[in-house]
Amino acid sequence: MKRAGSKTDPRPDPLVERAERAGCRSLQVFTKNASRWQAKPLSDEDIANYKTAASKSTIAPVIAHDSYLINLCAADRLILRKSREAFIDELRRCEALGIPYLNFHPGAHMGAGEAAGLRLMIESLNHSHDRTDGARVLSVVETTAGQGTVLGHRFEQLAAIIDGVEDRERVGVCIDTCHIFAAGYDISKRDGYEGTLRAFDQIVGLKKLVAIHMNDSKAPLGSHIDRHEHIGKGKIGREGFRYIMKDDRLLKVPKILETPKGEDLKEDRMNLALLRRLAQ
Ligand code: MN
Ligand code: MN
Ligand code: ZN
Image 1 (cartoon, rainbow, N blue to C red):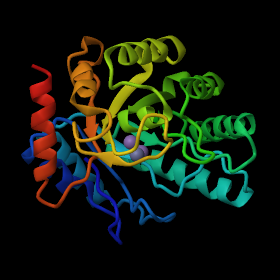
Image 2 (image 1 turned 180 degrees about the vertical axis):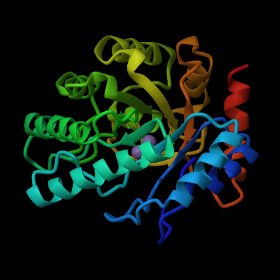
Image 3 (image 1 turned 120 degrees about the vertical axis):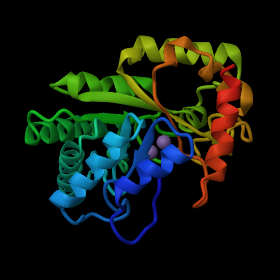
Image 4 (image 1 turned 135 degrees about the vertical axis):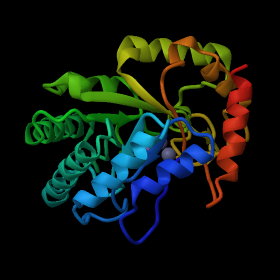
């Protein structure tokens, strides 16, 4: 689950307790307001509060999602510089909190072309890793629907990014089911699902997969439109999620809901219950 849209920087510690009450075993949070560049630095008290909540909880892992403004392959030098500074700050926030994963979107090349975009992306990651030398948090690149000039909708692009990163131990990958389906990987049918997993393993490697965003898709296969739907209610449908939930290769990979939800999390409870039924 994740939250966005608040005006202030969110506190991650109450979210841990809330997720546990909803029956979650893993959790995705923002460590700052996701629609702003700047964040108030974490105080020692913020860090202590979060660490206490996390240590009392059975939730593991907690994953952070980066700000939506960050574009690590922006052709505009100013945006690129701001993106890199913000990304480094987010890596440091995760490190301070003991959050092991920072999930991010590869960004959009804005017309500069795929090759140029991937090159900038790789430079951004290497620069960010240099500036956070010794940090344990992984930069986790998320698959995208490929809307506009957004990169990361082909497994080959993810492989190219990982290939270019100097310290490969510091990168992981997150599959978003809605995004890959909209990008053209048909996980709604058995053979399409198997082919997708095989391709991912051959091109990226399943050992690089650190999380799955479990979202059904309002938009059709290959539409390159990113619209999340409740599990089983979209174009992927229950069967696609049954393949995932029953797949031993994915048993230990944390699965995160990014489906629509209200304050009481009743939708999350519903989606979790359905996924757990599909695993039977
Ligand atoms: Mn995302
Ligand atoms: Mn996602
Ligand atoms: Zn999405």
